[in-house]
Length: 222
Length: 221
Image: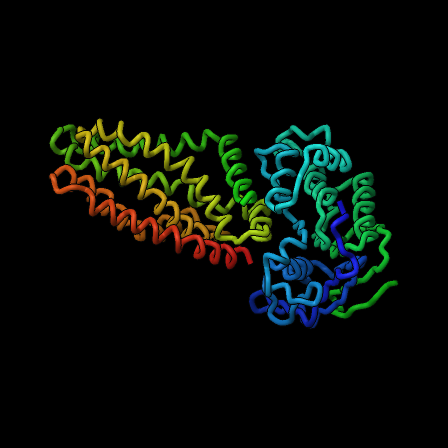
């Protein structure tokens, strides 16, 4: 599934990002430079603007200042092209209560215009340990199971950039290990992952990086 | 294109799973339209006179029912974010959603309207014009209503605000739709009125999706 990546060109860059919510300035001068294989961890206390930063990166919000570049081009110059490069999983799992797990996953893929085969879909659900719940309407799934269904997208997508907002919240150890492995494999294939998490996530990343919104300074941990 | 078809298909599937909600809209339409004879008395001449207007007012109110929640569920569960990030222009995605909404809520109204027309003693020609008017007018009602729903997305009072914003804007549709039936009944011919409705439909079909998409972007920024 990771075959169409051309890893050498992959390059996500942000310069001087600033964000304001009402009167309050959340952050300014956020910048990072993430080549292929980079895991960017966005850290900061509650309310420091982690989610806002992720939403700016994917193009859901416009920054007050600064810009995001993908392969050297500003992403806002061609929103549709950027949309087909980035996968965003937000706080909300985007599951419909009246659809079952498999239908929800299929819709997510189709909405993203990603090709989908029934076997791959079943395999992805199995990987996240929810295959036995595939035919159950999402309203009967537990919080952790809903999260697992949403995360099964990761096993199906061919997009190079993943932006994940608290991806492992509510997951048990087994599911967390699986997610760590999926993210690790993506990075190894030249993908780029930007995520926020309060849990300790053990991912084998070729290039780890931390963007700390409390300090708004950037430090490579490598 | 296949993304559009997917949105349409999943909206229809979702609506089918919640089909009781659709019956509610239709039931509301029939009940509202049936209240007037109870209040005004059963004089056949009076009923024939007010029939078209009553059906139109009932249709206006019934289409409002589902509208306030049109984008709210998607907004709350995160689907709206994914719609905005889908690799297709947001106005197109909005159109697909609205097409499904119209098919499932307005088309049943159009199908039920002839029965209500008979109840009010409308002539066959008048009933034909009534249905034609509804088929042209209800898409406009959906589009205008969706603008209101998108503008009030995330506001606590949106359920009350949407009718207040939307109803005044829907007055022209009401005038043209009811006017068409009246013109038909008085022998003038409904053609001009229906043409006006069609023109209104085209204008809104072209303009509204972009406005809705713009409002959705602002509301979910």
